[in-house]
Image 1 (cartoon, rainbow, N blue to C red):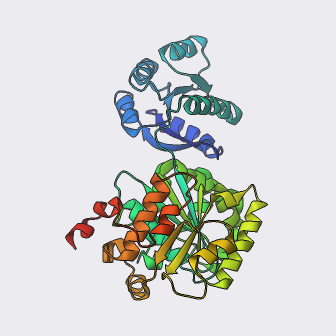
Image 2 (image 1 turned 135 degrees about the horizontal axis):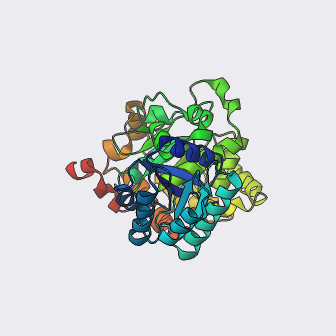
Length: 406
């Protein structure tokens, strides 16, 4: 998965910033997270934003620009500086490099030159391990319709977002029939379609403004409003959107459709973890086997899969847990206990579990699963989950105010 750099621009001239932003938008290499029109405050601003690369426009005031580059190089050692100017004067280029700039680009900026400069920065970031934030993409898929995958995606995302140290976005990729917005009682004028239409000019600010921020801290990107818009989003555009979200958020949760469309497969390929939501019945388990077999033929995507049994009741039903694992040929990662009445209530009220029933066993189980996914081993064997289908209270619940009050 390609690393997308979080970039900042320091340039008092709006024209220079717009030219650079337009060129960056054509590359899947960097996302403009912030801009500053003042050389004096630019270095501190860039340092506070914890960026991967900073572009400094020289033309407005070369002397002040060189000083800003010098300060950036001294105060933000792990944040490379790229200077850009309409001038190709050798003396100016030399002064910029001596001040600490790693690269110098001439306006009009050549896309290939910019890509090369950014690749150099990427290599430095990856080699030094200086990237402070690594995004995790979790795809949530259902083995059958009605398995509860959307409810799980919504509540997992909300629980993760309860931690103020995390930035979490939920993407509703069930384009024909998605209802994540209904489960969260969220109305928003922008949808996945709006983001797709503007993907070529997206920067971090525009991306954030295109998302719905809920009181829980969770950001939501709803499905398109109209059914016919489904055909207007292709896999290339979706990969670009997910890459931009990865650059701006610590966790990206993607709720897939049940059709396993080309868009769903693109999201599965980009995901770090796939939660396959199933129930302990023969149709659901049979579909899991079929899907895992198909995934093995697609770059071993099955290795990312964690099987989650929803609506689990211990020692009940025609198929027991041990038999299900024999059918699947692998361990089940987690079991979510059955609480039909509560789930109907939260779905109809548009309120997530952690807000309406933070002490309920189902809430605690999903919270503990979130902790196992984010803080556990990358292989996720799930042996602890098998031993304890109703998990002990998780530290995630302490981050939600109502969890303490109730």
